[in-house]
Length: 317
Figure 1 (cartoon, rainbow, N blue to C red):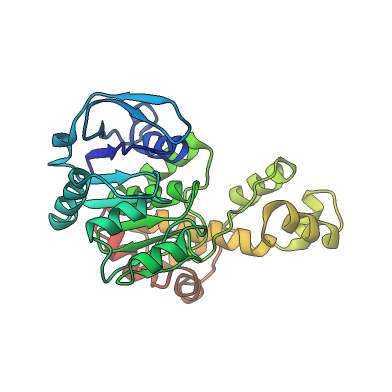
Figure 2: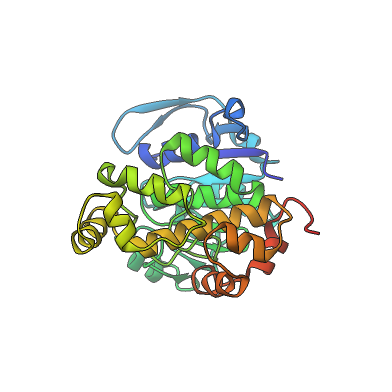
């Protein structure tokens, strides 16, 4: 169970990626029914740590806090030689089976520690060629948001760190906990690719206020068979105009967006209920278990049965 999280503040740490880890793991959301983590920020030399933007953060905890962490997070930092003390913490965490998460250029610290040897990994696309050249034992994929290889999760630049962090929460604590955090952060609980080992599309969906009423209605009626003509009437547009503007504003087609929401809802039901596959399929608009299975295989590279076996918090009847 994911309880103790330690964020490593390396010299030259970038504030946004640092803040992503703090936002996901460092806030008490128990009042909303969400998780609370034992969260610590640690550094090799307690005191001021200079950020990439030239200001200092005062960090009180030393690296001893990381000895029993369930997750070690390494945000982006200035690329270059990393203090051996940080590398030892990363190696120890990987060896004991704890999660090790990097955001953006944080992957270079993991690579220096040797924990990416023989693994797939990613980093910001601007640094991918350099990571591959300097660490040829690592298979670098520049076209994904994040990669999970065993207990090591590496993410691409900036906001992809949110995807990777929420992925770990989902694996450990399930859909409900993830949804609480995502709702508080006003981000999707998972982007295209979901619980598969990596996310295929490096481009985030764009959520526009112009379609908020329609998308809310789609979610409320997700079990129904919804057509573009119905949705266009709801939006007071012609079908052609609706389809064109929806894609422009939301980054995908209406049917693809709805299908993704159906998969997310099905995942939640599979995790949290003992409803039969046929019932889950009907309640999420897939109609039949075989159709739902087809979409799970296509998007998540797994079946609903296998997904439930891996992530269900209750034993299905």
